[in-house]
Image 1 (cartoon, one colour):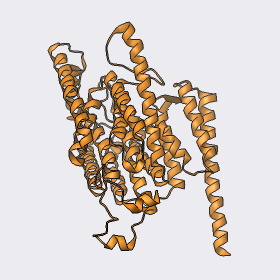
Image 2 (tube, rainbow, N blue to C red):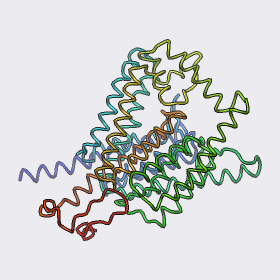
Image 3 (cartoon, one colour):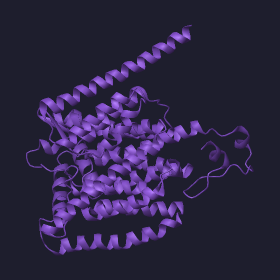
Length: 465
């Protein structure tokens, strides 16, 4: 009798939280759309409507809202309220994160726990600059940075832990296709009137070329690596990969191309995926030549206002600014309030050291080296989940060596994908426990190692599928 009462109370509690989420999302959507207006127009309105629909459907599947938040992470359109604004990406991560915390199981894997702790170390080292430099943007950005990494990880974890890895990655490919098609459409219009130049997509929402290029690079890695556990059909991933590469080429985002090429190269070298070697060679040689040629042309032009010279000038200014507060920095988002240094440093470590000083830079280094180490180990233990997780995170830190780092969606997208894979790993292990006899019999023909792509499933797995 007691167990039945506890059971009933548990179901009531779960339903209460679903209705609380539904009410919160409805109020937020109504507030933005009816009262304050939306800076992103119809795109943001549609995104908010999708969130409400997701919460309505949550009684059928509790993790439907985090699942629907996955494509929202790519939306950089801003919603305005009062004197401030935030991106649809931030809103999607926040609502998905809350849903996962309340409704998902949190039996984190060792890799997931390690990544959350590594992010906590960085947050602790940046807390000093928040205390020493008390201005609102500093405090808000401290929480925002935590959300962009840990919040995105937990969002992806909840979706993957619910067994929705395949659906989540298909949504990633789908939104990537939309961005690629928007880039191509903008390019066609632009080339007719102004000729060949970097494309800043205007549809389905206005995007900077480096965001569009970075997002397409992450989607290209999903289509290129195509983790076997996600069962992504080749008839979708192959054309999607070429579509993403065309869109990335049109944006002329050099940092995104470098991050993608290096991640693909490491994947091919470590996994021995022979079917991809020719593709990587075809992309790498002309890609590197074009990138180097474009940089050389900018330097030889002696145009002091092109991106190469402008970055060098910014580097000098940031270094001079850092020397005034070397230990704790000038505060997160200091360029919002500083009288002269009113630009965001275009390089990850420079931005961190100017904002948070040497303390924050140490935490940043520990966090990123730790991320790569734990994901590299996961790749070695189980490539089905570790290969793509490592590739997208590695690609992001490479991109950030040549451009802005703390930019909402560009930071969170790779961690959502990594979280998807980490959550799916725990779900898969729960659904496919090794049989005791098989686990102890090393000579059994039913057990085969799956260290990289291309190795066949064992017969027991095939029966379960």
